[in-house]
Length: 542
Image 1 (cartoon, helix red, strand yellow):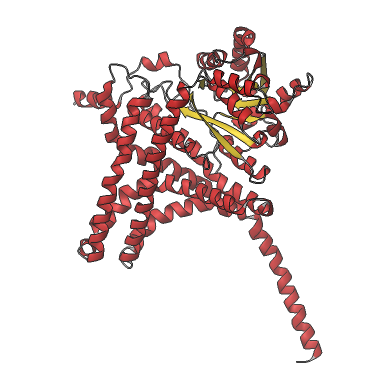
Image 2 (cartoon, one colour; image 1 turned 90 degrees about the vertical axis):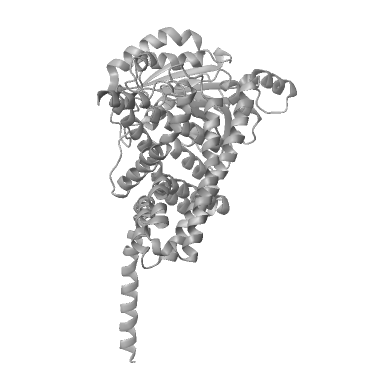
């Protein structure tokens, strides 16, 4: 090869190499989009491919089904154990005199922060909620077993609901301002840049305004614990004392969040049976997560030090799931040195409801779809983890990442897979069922499903132990019979909302923040909401 020919080859190589850089950059710039698509791809592949591949590869598909069901079974047994453990912790926490524990902590002088120095800033955002709902929530804060002078309350209204917001703020401020150390009212302007309509933008704006007002007295922000609530949230009387105790006692508190147990009990006996079951299931799930602090993340009402929030620029203003996103933001901000501390006391919330039976079911479905938008955090954390990989703890970050993907994957697929794919493998191909391998698969699946009934029995038992006493018209028999609806409920209000949401995310369509309808309890009592009553009326009309 001549010298000129060699130069020509080298020039061509360099040219082609440099041409690759824009392509690589394009791939990297789209990595967020790739991982927005990933959850839907995993879910749909799991639900569709077994039907396509079963005939050419029956043993491979059967092995996959067995593996999936076995992992689901292990998960169900793990959940049953932690549900029992967390329920015991919950009962124990409710029996503790937390004021006395704080008194003992003060006397021991073993912490650098005294419970007497802690200030609670509680932010309650509202958008079109009825005054009765807001009043009941604020009254529960005012009734808390805590020094009222150290409770700062902020009502965060929206300019998009200016008339109602200002009217309600004036009435509530007049009624409750004397019951708190400080009462703030902040109106969030509409259409601020780099924001979407949602809770995150509202509470961030409110926290910024309150922080500015608190800066003048030079209050140490490190001793202020900020709790965000939803409009229908009602605190357990001892919750602020318990939060204070854990806040003072825990090490490295600046990098901690504190998570009470969300229980949807406010209107549990006034909603349709399926809504009640989903409310109970959600409460059980949060109990389970509290029993496993290594997996616990922010949800709905949670608490974080004001100093940390200022450092992080408060909450994410561009997502409709600011609570879950706050966990991943904090994890990345503190380079993996971030934990959520469980508080085994409840924040009581409303179960999803509507003015009609169908409206209630629709409200429930939309609420679950909004929660399932947390699958967008897969892409968010992927990008963040890639940027900060050198500073993050490798093993813990990988486990957190895997658990997030696995959680959304099982949410979208489990009920549908067990209800459709598994029966297909067991019953459709009779020839395969007659083989040794096929018969073993069928026997193993039957055994696993029988054992898994333990989890349902545990949930049924806890329904009687944890929920408020049912009214006479509901009765305990109906509480047992409602579990017959479990297969339908877990598919229609379990897998489908998550699957629809993940598909919407994969298609690049954004989801608007839909405020779950809050209906005062007296209005719910005036309508018949029981599923069994609807069925009875249907047969009477025939």
